Image 1 (cartoon, rainbow, N blue to C red):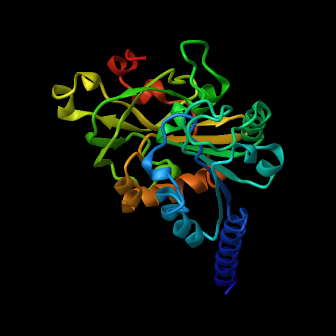
Image 2: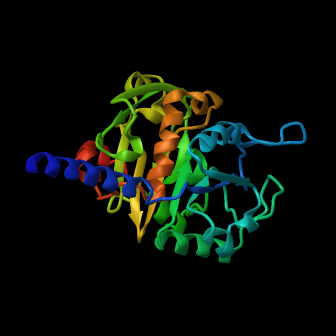
Length: 288
């Protein structure tokens, strides 16, 4: 009888602990920022006939299912200390120097806003960059900018779209839990410079495959395409996919969006220890 009571108590305690862990985080408050100071991708374009972008239309029902809140903006003035204090996860799908008005006509960020963003992440905020986020605040041949250092890499160039294979190299990581070991898809594949090897936790590599024989620009070893890092107390994740509308529509990508957001919010273990030297072979590291 005593053993039975003890077993019941253990089960109850496990349920209580699970409930406490589930309630530890409120539903995330997400700010999607899609200003384009340079090239504006079709997936984030809006207009008088299209009030919301393709990315917003994909994220909105997903966010609702998560019980989360989504605010979308192209207004750089929204990146400020007060707005960030009300936000758990910031998502960038951007291009160019966002402190300039640029091509899309929307208000730019201020330098104070950029400084506030970096401070907010270091203090525990979550940041996710998609595709052209690495094309923002580039070094322009000078020293690596604080933003690029934070994000972990800088866009260099790209070739024609092709079917590449995303290969998972951090199989236990919660930010890519649903990602198959290999996922082949058509997309535009960025090449990078200034990869932050010392702080990068590589989640997936791009397997180029036979495209090496078709495009000389890709006649290189496989390289990181999804990665994350710790930034102070905060979490940063970059996903190089998402140029095409059908990538955002793909069930695999939608599952990743959910996992990216929850990880960036701080749920679960960070698992952000640097692993570049372990998962990127020496001949691939030579590219940097």
